[in-house]
Image (cartoon, rainbow, N blue to C red; front, side, top):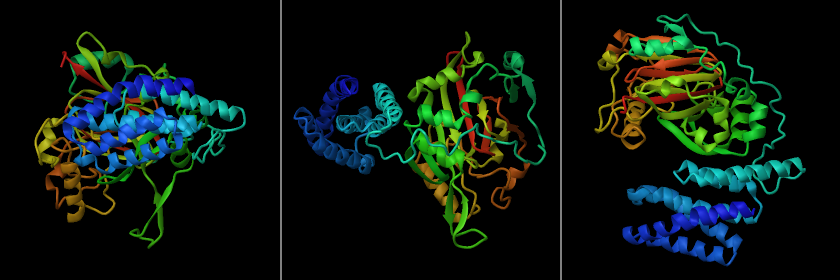
Length: 451
């Protein structure tokens, strides 16, 4: 416990809190300052129960008033970091290691400093030790590390799909560098790039993953865009619900009448999990082509999800390698020359290529006016604000040609990615991605020419 408390106090609070209080004075957020100072006082007096309650209220206030709080100077992430650090301190003194890990992971996800990763790792280690000794401490995680709901490798048989109309060319990994030098604007599926990775076998072992990383919490998207909800779940909960036995949700709009059951979609999408859980980095290797004399790695993201996740048609401003590690995905690509046929959103302005299109797209009810407006609102007010790199067409495989007549003439190429396949996508190529099974992928964007 001492190491955790030292990290939270010395490495996080003593660094972040003075800056936050100065910002509160600058921006006139007196209520936040009063709550932080009360937490500071309760911490010094070791009033752990009262500290827990006060910090909980502060976190709730910061979440509910986020849109009204200052956006300058990383104010909101810093305020959340301080509040969550106090929550974690109170939990540590109660030896509630589950909540210590959860608060630390949440703080990292909202933009807190890297030290929260170490706090979460220490808390998870305490949970592991407690489990081995036959007691788990105070926890609300209803699935323990010895859960037997999945006792073997994730069995994902090849999906049954229609023959591909325009299959993407396949090349061996040894030819990738030559391809990038001679034909960089053509997408290819690369075979053998993951040959030395441990990830395909380790990540498919759900029991191993739950035992090793189950206490860690991650941000998930639930449902289909633009009707998404977001929440944090432990990886143990995530794997149990969506990989061992796919969860279902009840709907009243299906053909079978009220109470239809359909698989619930959950997506850990475009997340820097390799930074949050650095041990995962040892399971893979950054492809050599991402780091050369004229290329540098820009970002690596993890994409883990249930069957049915959808990333809507969009493009990125960086070249991209999408490595399919576990399960299967269908991908359809359109060249930049097809942009006029893809009906991109045009609201707002700004850099059109900086968002990577990390969310699910809902076409279950068709492209009616209400759904279309919901999409527009999501773009205007959400992560796509000011972007024109996302298409208004929800699913290129099932297009409403009355609304999008030019779409039928858009040329495309496509692929079903199997475990071990890696797709090279040139910059500015539009792409649509959907999971055909529970799926785990990781992708690498790189910069070229010092861009």
